[in-house]
Amino acid sequence: MQQDLFKIVHDTISVEEVSNQVSRREAGAITLFVGTVREFTKGKRTLSLEYQAYESMAVKMLSQIGEEIKGKWPDTCVAITHRIGKLEITDIAVVIAVSSPHRKTAYRANEYAIERIKQIVPIWKKEFWEDGTMWMGDQLETTKYPEGKPDEEE
Image (cartoon, rainbow, N blue to C red; front, side, top):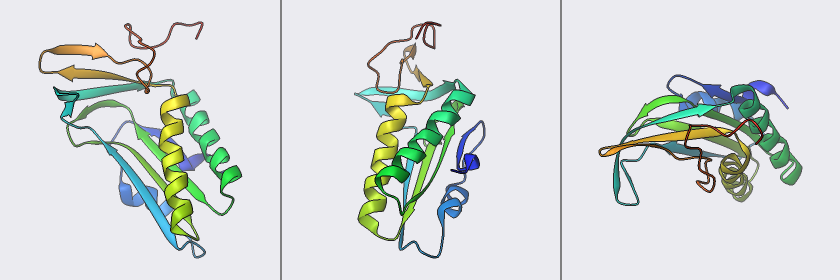
């Protein structure tokens, strides 16, 4: 698996560049998931977000997701780029590109990728709301990290 298909970046993500990484002659479909910063979450207005990550571990886990997808759907090619740092409303936080000979496989593999990112990639989000800020914990928001990241033991 090519390591450069899986990246953590600090600057704007180019959707076209991520898509081009999986473009190939045998692919009949490329699906793209573009995760953006939304303004409202559960009725609460967000002004901006900040993502932090254990970058080397995050890249390793993104690569693992690529391996998992290759195991489930051998004809796919996957590239994932996630941005960290401060992001404004409508900024792109993550791009997942999956190419496959057939569209259904590309759709399924792409959805699998975003769900796995939320489950296993060590990236944390801080919400800047119009009435305050809060670290949201893990990406599934099931474990709170009030200090911004997990304790050393986790």
